[in-house]
Image 1 (cartoon, rainbow, N blue to C red):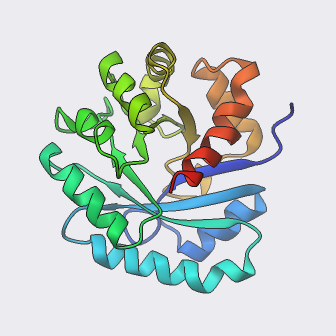
Image 2 (cartoon, one colour):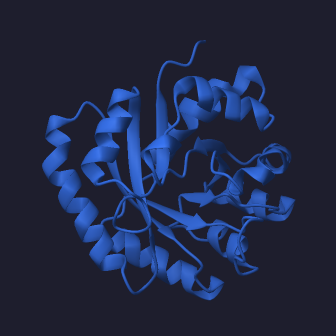
Image 3 (cartoon, rainbow, N blue to C red):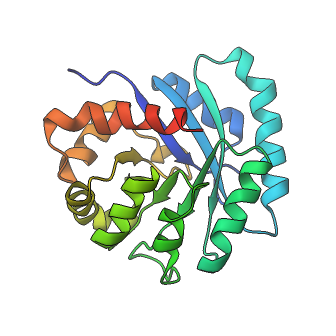
Length: 221
């Protein structure tokens, strides 16, 4: 089956370190034929309530005029692992439809234990760029319905092939996101397919990773 649309459940707006307003993100994603886009700005206890209020307000006013689903999300970033469960639960209580955790990418000094805390938490939906995730952690993700991310972002993407192999061994579900910060980071369908293939996703599983799994992730909310 030819892939004709996309989901992106990991983008950043001006409310953390992105360059675009929520309205710009939604419109650019809509123009590229996306079915849904999640704005998942970086948060910790200092800004979570403020960020979620801003994104929710934008979603509530824009959604009726869009031909794309706009999803309110957060990315818990560089938290001490012991705080992840508490902050994920708080994010859901504040209206986050999806909770992502900034995983142990090889490109940044993320605290060891972050992946384990994320895949063990019932309020976490996606472990972003999980780096050198262990088979045991991936098995826990599979058990708890946490999706593992194939990342198109420079640096984070360096471990994509490893992530795909370990996820497949453990039976964990994969999805692909851009981790968009600026306009040029948006993925076309054609480029998303190339990133997935380059990470080792077989052609016969492209629909699963690019379409079916993001849909399942959104349904899990």
